[in-house]
Length: 217
Length: 294
Figure 1 (cartoon, each protein chain N blue to C red):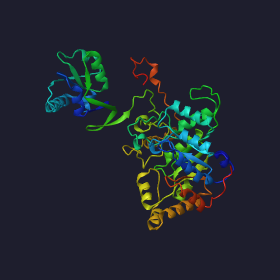
Figure 2: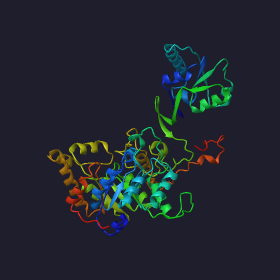
Figure 3: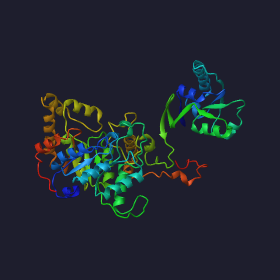
Figure 4: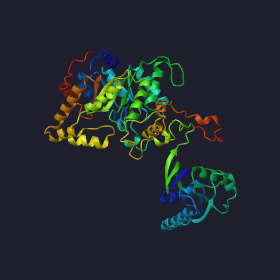
């Protein structure tokens, strides 16, 4: 799923300066599961913003709501945004974009969109995919070197690996993990396959605005 | 004599390192080069080493080449995409720079511009392949070059990497992608280096053992704790601790290793890291002192 996290309150307050009536809109799919965009987070953020705004001597009225998915037009069309002069989205970047395109009123992000991840435990996710448009997971034993290697190396570990840890000290070395898993599956020989440079134009085979891949970046 | 010719002559090759300045004043770099030049076959020029921004390696290589030095142009993939890398390589070739050391490069997060976008459009194995492609007269897009470079490509390897198996598998990929010589991360344990060399000797490549001259026990402990892939054995740390002149002891330790490694590999690469004046002493004590023919 898309993993998100709340922005600092100060940054949000700054964005909302001068607004009269703001809709805080959660998203009940990824953002809710990420504990950043569900009912409870909308309520909590309204309270926190009211406090922060009143401390600054400002007046903004907040109303709350949650869409099932901000990134789908039918949910956005069914939404009631009457007498709202801005939306604060508790969804991912795609949700913000859809809201902004559909409603015509200013939309601000309350969250930062981090990565596509898999759950590691309660409230914990690990980045597993960078949506690069040309998947190599079949030859890397299901561990993405584009995402899990800090340098996105496609051909084996760099010299910075330290007892199986990345030189940045924040993760295991993806290539040590890939090597181990390939060996354990009897696929050690495929490590020797030389991966060519990534085709960064991979998404272009689709119409960029209709693309499942996203087009040129 | 070119680096390739030095290897081919069968002599025990010596290279060392100079770092471009942070700023435009290249006088100190050229001075360091003059100190080292009589003792080495080539000077390796670092590329924003440790992701710290400095004067461009290509410009530094041009300065050094024009001063009469044989250079090794280090190229990392951290700061430039495939257009910029090919473009700079052709630029280097146009100035007569032929020795290239292809590296992936330290991550920007460890350097002094940690907010920067890390490029890594290519990495070391792919860069070696690109150099081979340029040497064959075309660019990565298959377009013909007007004027073809003749690069002598090298790469790096960490013989004490843990775990070692994936590191050695990558070494093989680098050989297959066109690396003609290797420069190792700093090595101290002769037995461990010998075992690495038994592996490396299965391939048609030259190997320079990496030498970092230790200047104190603290430096040795720091490297053990903080530099991935470097292991300074406890005995060496103890030797430095007991010494009243640790810098001289460090020189002797390096010289001793070189004497031991002399029959195992094809040469050494001395990374003096701010103590370039020690490099000639190491070379002298290792018994490698000789006039380098022009």
